[in-house]
Length: 610
Image (cartoon, rainbow, N blue to C red; front, side, top):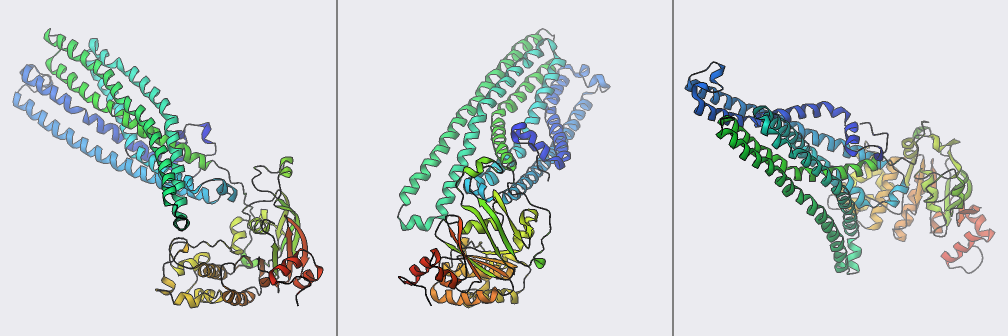
């Protein structure tokens, strides 16, 4: 599905939707035709009733008689056949329009949700850091559902109201033009009232949709942190917070409901003026033999038929405004630009040797700008950093918290782009490479392990879905995970729970390592990969990682310096700058920042360790 090229501010949200749903235009047209035909046949029974009254009163002089059917029984038979045919066609077109509109609503809902989700997946990490998960969930789920409800019901209702108004207005002007205008006269006021209510409802429903996101964010955050809530016994405090957000949502809805509910009574009183006029003045014309009794009956019944759909316009307007507010939020999200621009150069993992080069890289978070002087006034997390890791080497990056270690990893994966300098793999600028190729060439084991709700097998397979059981087990053994996995209730088919909550922190981390090992990337990044395991498991994993690192470039970010003693090169970051580099022994002998960290961790007060 092609996405809109203009921002939502340039066009009305439903016009944006029409452009977006180009492949569904034919379905929309057929659904529209069926809705109109259904309403035309739905309006026919009052005409049949008027015709029946005409037959009973006029007999051989009735309208049907003038068509060449003077016998009363024949006239009644024609009415009976016409009634059966009209009801059958009305039912047929009702079935057809319901099928078309509902399937259309489901198809657009599905397409829009998938396209929006796909767009969100490719937004930069900076976007997610500035947005709440609850807001995004509200757009992807609730807002798109609001649009589906409108397409399912509201679009047909609007079409049928318009059809009813035009048809009945035409019939009145044909039967009694001298009084028919009395029914038509309220229409401009009804239209004006609809527009007035619509304009007043727009900001109210926009506020409602925004609060849905806030409430969803609160609920999502609390459910994710339920263990923390329980451990601090803050259930009452969090309940009060949810009550406050939910109460705000209720109040915003009340404001919208108060206005939208006033629509029906106002419209009904306007319509009844036309009904009274037809009842009184049409009755006088009938008594004076200026209007046939059958025609008078048709006008009375038709006025009633006009009353119901116009009073329902209030609920239809409610659906419409909710859909407009929701569609606007969806297309605002779709209009959010992808800050990370993918290159076009192929970078097959099988052809990557693994030399990683940072050349004078400077980066600051949340600048919101690039290539301008304003960028350089922001505090840099990484400042003019240059280093090289040769293919097949194991390199370590160490430094105090906040020194920029994890940022280096994010820049290499192109979660962000540096404001200055460049990063190369095998001599090629990663900005020129395809993003998918780049990230397939890199395996990441993060200290913040995320496991998906599914089995152990599913999670290990995540980076390489076509691997067989032998390869899965080999990856698990390399990560020292196989032994604990086979002790689980269902082994590799054990469900780990959402975020892997049924496993310990160390078990989750070992599965994360197994997942990266199975991916078999030419470049492996271990960001505090053993931070959640005990010393014995750490030693076992270290032995495995030394084997895993053979033949691939490995970048290790670590606080525990004991895990990186054998690295080919160690880079020491200090406040975003590269302050030292060398082997473990060289850095300890140098007596700088690394030596100080080593002494603190080993308990030595002075001098290098042996």
